[in-house]
Length: 176
Length: 150
Image (tube, rainbow over all chains, first blue to last red):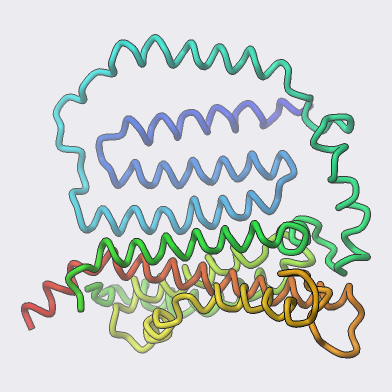
């Protein structure tokens, strides 16, 4: 029975996400966000995307938490507002409508793991069949990322490089 | 500036944990072709281990010196990645077509495997250096105060 831990996991996701938004103490909010990343990684692992789960744990729960905490040490650790401003009426009406619309549209998506869905009949079978003899790399995710789609990954690396450079330029302007 | 942590427990734990985390990062980086992991995750783990060393032992400790030296290597990861692509161009193929890496005695599949490994190292260096430089710049304000005081 798959319901044994799926439903509690998704409930924990919702609870940690809501807690991270509502928490007054920003330090607790950051740690709750780390918990949220960890539960999200469990969801990825449950769906079979182990590589994505690994990245989520390391970046979301590890690195991002450290960066948030360092930012908090430089600023104020508490949300000083006594009362948060209430959400605007337009958002209260529009966001549930958007959610209902997305749920309605999700009915037309192919079922998870459907072998006849467009994603799994177009080019994925070729990758899966030829990856090992083409590249001698058993992990197909790595061979797709680094060989078949290498240019995309290179531009992704450029994005990370640009982010690092931009942080240095914005935050260290007074250091010679 | 981040001062070294006072507690002896944190210090000894860090002395034990940092090398373990670094070895695990290298394992993830080089095992990415055979299991989950790869350049991005390995780079983040390596960078995080050095951030841990900075947070525990302070900016000036000898264990943080590697991270400071690495800061000068910003862009080396990109250079490795694009350089592998350029080598493929020199070998007569398309950009980043690893089968045209000019290494005698290797069949195309083995060359592709080697190319994947090299580009993964490039990604890992890039990600690690970016993470460390973001952490350094986030704690930069305090560096300015320190240089004004002393």
